Image 1 (tube, helix red, strand yellow):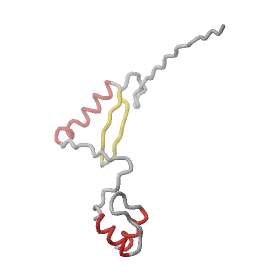
Image 2 (image 1 turned 45 degrees about the vertical axis):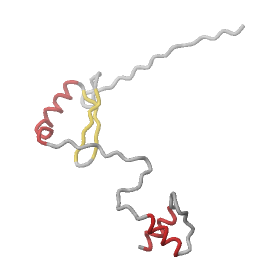
Image 3 (image 1 turned 180 degrees about the vertical axis):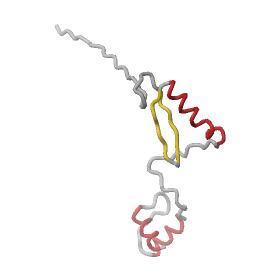
Image 4 (image 1 turned 90 degrees about the vertical axis):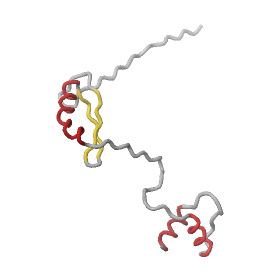
Length: 113
């Protein structure tokens, strides 16, 4: 006979205020000069934070977050894929008629132009 005893474990995460260390804080996100920040603040310090920034948030414009897919290309000008294929064929490089163009071919095209 095999007896298995299961043990329960409860894990509590306590978020403390980053300024004074009090328990029960909540995370506040904000941005300045294009840099995003997060800070954990108690109710009292959150109220102080909101009061300090009230003048600026009342007169500022809300901005939608700019989400990027992981691995997405940089935000430069989009290269004409047909022109890359044409150039590659003229220069003896192997490139398919459709689909992805290899990073090597793209780098050679960009270096030549």
